[in-house]
Amino acid sequence: MVSIVKASQKYAESFARAVDIVARERKYLASVTGFSLESTKDFIQMGEANDFAQYFALDGEKVIGWCDLIPKDIEGFTHVGKLGIGLLSEYRHQGIGSMLLQKTIEHAREKNKIEKIELEVFGSNVQAIKFYEKFGFQHEGRRINSRKLDGKYDHVVLMGKWLLGGNNS
Ligand SMILES: CC(C)(COP(=O)(O)OP(=O)(O)OC[C@H]1O[C@@H](n2cnc3c(N)ncnc32)[C@H](O)[C@@H]1OP(=O)(O)O)[C@@H](O)C(=O)NCCC(=O)NCCS
Image (cartoon, rainbow, N blue to C red; front, side, top):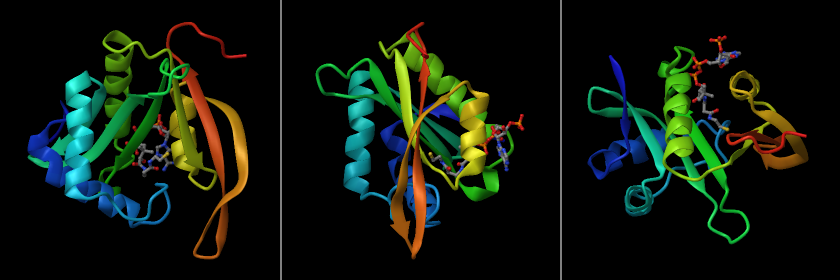
């Protein structure tokens, strides 16, 4: 039975482990290893202190997925939130990513002043692109062969979604 909860330090270790596992798949995340426990704790602390949209999917007490939408911190860009999401492989394609994303967007819309969501996804990650399109994300551009990993090139696709009216043109 999977539940969606607000991120908290209680799950820092389990969260760090989940990110590391997905990163080591070398397909979906920009990084090919996870982050240290210390920087993971700092990340959660930053989210908690600002009430940013940061959620975990739990199976019991184990973090099996995460989703965060963190506003950019440079003046002139703070209306934009950057999205990160991932699930352990055995929990994909069961609607859990949709639940996580819905909850995170709701929070960002209601509690933070995020007007627009932006993300980057590898061109080869067709299922994630379909997932984002289903949620109304639009294609905004593409960096050609931006990644070269294990001898293979991959495009970086830029996608965006306006939450507060905004401008989709
Ligand atoms: C991308 C991800 C978060 C989506 O979460 P999910 O729980 O697998 O997705 P859901 O089950 O909620 O599916 C929602 C929609 O996504 C799309 N989708 C999901 N799995 C798919 C697949 N295997 N093939 C094609 N489309 C797929 C479909 O449009 C689906 O809608 P439908 O069920 O009505 O067909 C998840 O697959 C994941 O963690 N992938 C690896 C990490 C990753 O890519 N992170 C994003 C990096 S930018």
